[in-house]
Image (cartoon, rainbow, N blue to C red):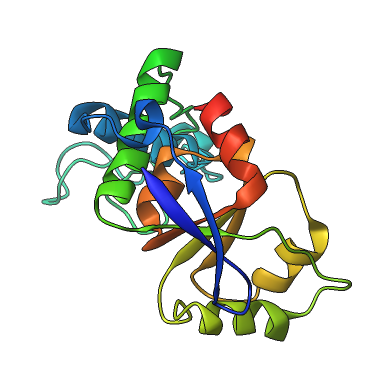
Length: 207
């Protein structure tokens, strides 16, 4: 697949790049994509939720009243889960939600996501650029020149560029990622995938 290269003014440079079919032209495997997205979202969970059970509540263990003869129900101590301020029954406990995926499954999921974007015309190649200093307006001007200011975008760079990253982080829906950090969820989450010209080789090698 051949794509034209645009500059930051939104104009065609006259150059084209070839996207290899073994990465951008495979038959999407929806099941591996689902597995990769599920694992990614699960791995984002902290799992630090915790509630106190009956044995962890501060309070007396004295029996509130005698077992029989009161006309009321049987009661134990004040930490009874049925009382206000009592312990919680079967409450959440800290746990690890992380899920493991095989490398080949991850790679196939990324290839499937990239191929789906390519088939839908949601990939754009942008000439390499940088900023002298972080400035949100400069990054927004680039998106406006590409008619992408109203869409969720993901700019893929070959290496970490602090000025570009900091210029984009205040814009909602405008994300920046290194080629080696690219994952299936981020690819699918964006309406338009913007590949920096120098990042394509690294995207192919890391997928």
